Image 1 (cartoon, helix red, strand yellow):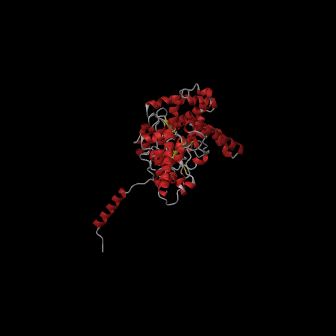
Image 2 (cartoon, helix red, strand yellow):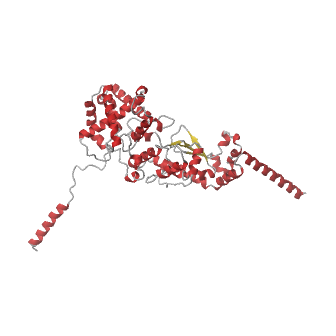
Image 3 (tube, rainbow, N blue to C red):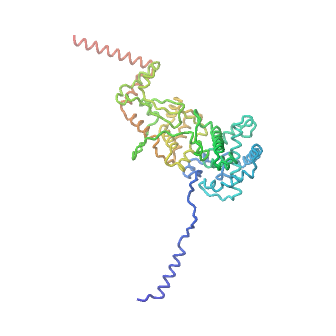
Length: 464
């Protein structure tokens, strides 16, 4: 059968039209994110909850907030002063420093979650100014004589504001940039595999890491954090290293258990809250003597409540405690945790131990009474002024956060089982009603003795 010429022509036209409709996919299409990516714009869902928690107020670092607002431009003059003084102090030329940045430009750009319409010269100058600003600031902080004369460090309020800006997720440059500039020529010479140069290079990197930790000293309490060289991606990531996680003990395919019992409810059930020091902020532990699991009647909390002078290691061991490291809550606490949680949501979606910690505190704190209880136990150091403000803070911190909860799975189960044990609530009720203090406990004991003697006499009379 011979095909119609008109039909063949129509088919040819349709094929041409289809070719025009085909999407042209470039061969060199970039991936959505490069493997080096570690600095992100905060997701919209988190920013809408409280956008100012992610926005710098004094100094912009990196491209996300580069010279966007007038108040940030004022610090650009200080960056130029620091660059001039850094070059004079170290003897390094601006050209050599710029070459170090330029040779790493592609890697630096790949560290960000977005592409920026900045030319190479503008981008290199921006990163150079920001990096030298940080290095010079850290050096002056370590030199007391310089700190007293410095424009930023001589004003505690400004220093605190700059420190806060430097930990914001959107206000970062990669840490390796600071290492490259700080180590200078040794970084290139070490490529010759000279052992002595390699050792000197590691020493300089370690010094830089320690200077960084000292600058953020206010964010950790007892022990100096010990992050490893090469594992820190930027300052938000460094601060996250200050809070090592608890060890999760989740079994495969085990369901998550979410407890809903507040601090006051647990206290009403007889659980004792105790602050601890010398431990990671996230290391919350439920302590229970094994004998209490089998013989709950050995719980002598009622005796210690009315006779506190009887406290001893032996008697204390027959109580249940929830040990929580003390947390200072001030005007910077919310911003700190919001940025750490934003980093986890973007970069560590399966290691959200900061998010898990906040969700746990949100469960424990629902009302002002919960905050009051934890403040009385010196677990929360309230610098916001009111219990209502702290309650509101923790109730909102967990909004729009995805948390898998594995880091506190065992703890949640233990708290559930403790509260749901009716014997614990009975003992707690008896303690609060009849053994709350020495006088009430004494009256109760005297009453029980009198009642016992009365019953004994009554039984003796019946027997006679």
